[in-house]
Structures are given as C-alpha cells and as structure tokens.
Length: 284
Image (cartoon, rainbow, N blue to C red; front, side):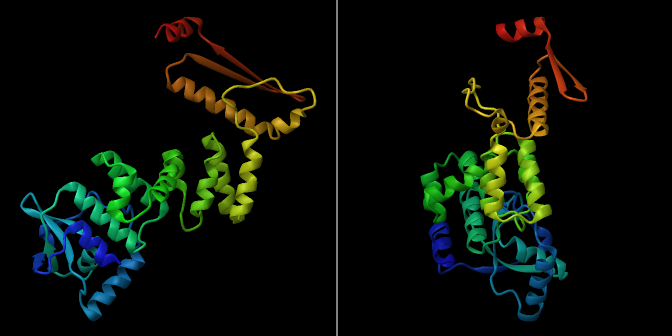
C-alpha cells in the first residue's frame, strides 16, 4: 500500500539510482510533520540497522549544494547515532508541495504521527500550498471527511494542544474538549483526565457538566421555572470565565479594571471601563 501511494505522488521510476551521500551533506526536512522523535525508538532502529543494514534508502532532493531529506528522517538520525559517515539515498527533483505531501504520506502509512501532528500537517499543506481538502485527500489517500475531522482539533488553543499527551489523551478525548468555549475549562478537563485516568465516556460527561457554564453569545432571561443552580453549578468556574473575558478585553486594548471582594456570604466583582476608551472603541 505504501509503495503504491508513494509511487503515485513521486512518479514511479524503476530506474531510480541509489547513491551514497555523506551525512554532513544532508539536512533535515523543515516540512517534516513530526514534532518529536522517540529516543528509545531511534535506539531500537539504530540497533536494527547495525544488525541487518539499511533496508530502505532515504529520499532526498538537492538544496543549496546539499541534500534535504524528503522521507527517511528517522533512518537518517539512527545512522547518525551509529556514527556512520554516509547513507544510501535516492535523489529526486521536486518542489516543496510534492516533498511535503510525500513526507506526510510516509508518516501516515507508518503511523508515526499523533493526531495533533496530523492535523497540523494537513493545515500546513492546505494553507501553505493553497490546496483544498479534496485535493489534499486525493494526494495522500484520505477522505475529505477524515481530514475535516482532524482539522477541527486546531480550534483548540495552541497551548491546550501543547499540553495534550496523545499517549494518554486520545483523539476522542480531545474532540470532546471542543464543546467548551473557555480554555481554562479545557485545561481543567485535561488535568482530570491525567489525574483520574478518565475514560472517554467519563470525559464527555465531565465536559457536558462544564459546558453548562459556557457563556452563550446572547444571554436570555431564564424562565421562572428554571433553577438558577442549573445554569451556574460551579461559582468558581463562572468567576474564572469572567476573569478570562476581562483578560482578553485588556489584550485588545480596552482600558478595563476589575476588583474582587470575597465576603462571608457572597463574592463581589466590580468591572470598570474607562468611558474615553469606550468612545475610542466605538469610533474605531
């Protein structure tokens, strides 16, 4: 399967010549979709290469009097660990778009990308080369729907994506976070997934409870039959939501001041906005 898909992207050429290139003439691929390389995994690969040799050559392309890796980053790093001076390679002429698609396809077929890396790689190809989801789907052998599902993950703030460990937090865990519109709520869920080892269903139930504290785009007066406690179940989360809103307002340049008073029977928050600043915002 991988051979056919790579041949489709690269263009089949039974006459590809394998050559040996010094490692110091090879540079890493900046379009490499993987963000990290498992050190024990590299050691195991290096041990395999030492025992059986390099079974599959890497693919490189000419770049600034050197060669840039297209596929085979792990094999290159493993050979570097072994102290080898050169590596078997196939030299191909290709543009950035084809190189990025080929690198992504190989990683997908080898299942070496986690779901966050996969989503970010899709976004880079779409935004970097102006591809549509349908075009990208054809290039890498994925369905447009599968690509769309992965891209939804990028709606999570970057710092939330950075604290997600895909080994612990599955893709379905991460998808559940999208129902929350406040990053501190999302962070709280991830924390509980780590600490309590929550299953997917438990995580979804937690998200459902917290989502009732989301501030809607338009707050409508509740019906008389509504129980206020059903709207705000956790005062602490509601207060944190207010603080988050004030923080974002300040980041946009609004002159806003918030004071808090923690009393015995109530918690008072006073928000003041400079009128001159409000007029400037209205005129802008």
